Length: 311
Image (cartoon, one colour):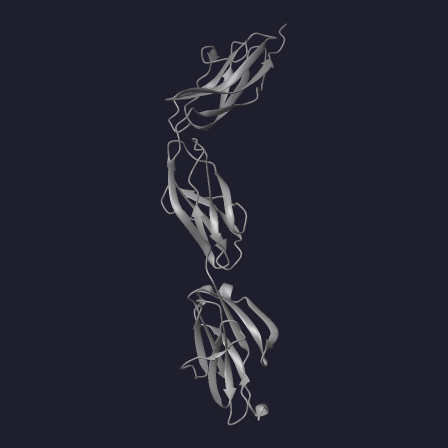
């Protein structure tokens, strides 16, 4: 009698929002009656539908928490059934005709998953251009976390479309270095974690970068003659306060300051070129770039050169 009963299982995803994830299908063949197990991972709250087609006889859907102990699913006797992913569950269809022993469809195992759960670490080590934060991936959501870090913006609710760090994978705590900031500015930070279901964000924290002296570097000396040369520098940051001057200073002694000879080459962030004049032939000079804001003056690294020999 069993040989006269023909059936098949048709599986469909009713909600396509998680189609990328739920397309992961794993098949195996443990000893569950006559059927194999089809394992499906579905975003929690999404729906999986199964349907029995070309079956002859009485249908009764059954469910099990472990794939071993089966119970009839009350009221589920139609050719299809829809299961909402909430907890791990096994289900199958029992097919019985007349007085014959029942046969069973393949077993479907539903494994729900979520986006990760992550928290944001408090901000520390704040400067005008950097800070430290991080987070903790409390739960991977049932799937491997393949990206984590912090994201930040001058606007609230930053996302990974804004500035971000990449600080490894998996669960647990991590530390993030936030760089490229502007002084005296409020920033908003959230930790993030990503798995195949999507990206989750931690609680938002905010901080203000401090105001500090400018940061400036000194350019190499070029075009050296008996009495002139070219120098310059690069103001990397104004320290969070408007620049009032920049240039280079030089002397025949080390560690020159603006009390010695100097140029004034604007008052903005970025590279600049300076002309040294009225030099003496065959003489060693020491040069440093400088930049000033309302807090004071800072100097770049020192370089030296020797002017050309005169007649």
